[in-house]
Each structure stands twice: as structure tokens, then as C-alpha cells.
Image 1 (spheres, rainbow, N blue to C red):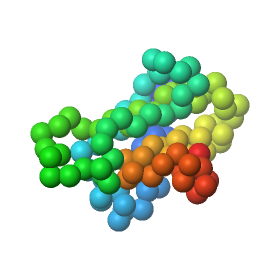
Image 2: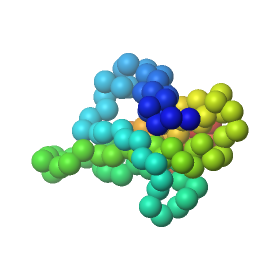
Image 3: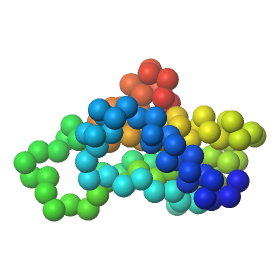
Image 4: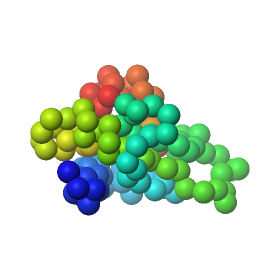
Length: 112
């Protein structure tokens, strides 16, 4: 799958987030990278300070980063439909971390 198509899938997955929640996202950027640096099976990564952890001290910081990794996703999926589903799951999972939701809770909700 070409990178541009994969990036489109990430954008479509972001569109799945209800507008009332998407409107609450703050100081966060979503990126697509080819491969993770550490874990070759990592599909996505949230780096930053979750909204639930931000206090009055939170100012003048770089944006949080949600990174979706194309290589591992394409390797684990055998069809385009699987890629679409996995990208959506990964994006929602990482956005959940932005909102302060733990891995355990995301798995319980079916986004793990």
C-alpha cells in the first residue's frame, strides 16, 4: 500500500472520533512513520501529557505526538480491509491515551 493511501486511512480513522471528543483534543499532532525505533511490532505510540494530567503548569510545551506505524501494520494485515480496521483501532487507541485512558481500559472497550 502506498504511503499516501495509508495516510488517508489514518485521516479517515480520525474522522471516526465523535466531533464532541475531537473538539476536546488539544496540543496534539498525529503522524505516520514507516517503522518504530524500538519495537518492530509496535503499531502506534502516544507520547505526551494526557489531558487528565495537565494542570496549570502545562504551558509552552511542544505538542503531544500520536505516531501510527505503517510497516508493522501492513505486515500484520493480509487484506486492505484488515488494514482499514487495524488503523482505525490503533488511532482510536492512541487518541484514548491522549484522553488519559489506560491500556487496560482500552482493551476492555475493544480498542486494544
